[in-house]
Length: 278
Image (cartoon, rainbow, N blue to C red; front, side):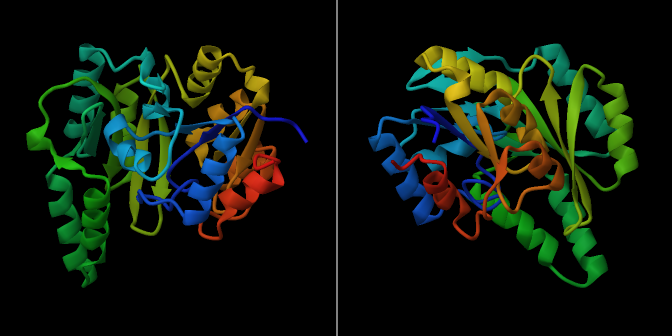
């Protein structure tokens, strides 16, 4: 069994159920046990720093890769900090807005969502004869402490999460923003098209390499856990990759192994299976 010295954990769909900030008790216990054995444990997430902070109260971590690699923190030290340039920021926000795509901007201080998104969901609920969509969104905003766009103070943006009524609208905006890649995620349950900007200067994989360099660990001696397309760079950078059982097909095919789902306590079981608790 390989002696992995650094562990990297995605949050949504891996450490927690998507949109939640409370990991299973079994996962917290596994993290604490691994750290007592001298292993270093890091979050590696698309969430901005403000949205991952609730997790820091649930378990002790040695640092984190936030905003899909845009911010890398080891201990209390910033190893890498690379928000969008002001020009990139203005361009992508305008292109998305002009094409009717709702935006959630992620900054170091918080996440801010277009107020019109709630109105859109409310109208969709009326059309469907239910209040399920709006209740779903309100629950996510409350759990992740998201704020309305009117409170956004212009601080640097690391990424933009996009929610589009149609794929065509999003694709028009994407075509105008060729300085970015976009990771697309169809939300079939809620009939939305979701995506997130991906900065070409970094990704989760570069974040893993920066952490490993900072702590003196060979990336080959690291293991990572994820569940979705934006975890593929992480899978490529770590010495061994594990996809959650609830993950997408592309992530499962790219990982070295697949464990049980987050709902089934898969993370803790995988820690045991891959020798992280011994």
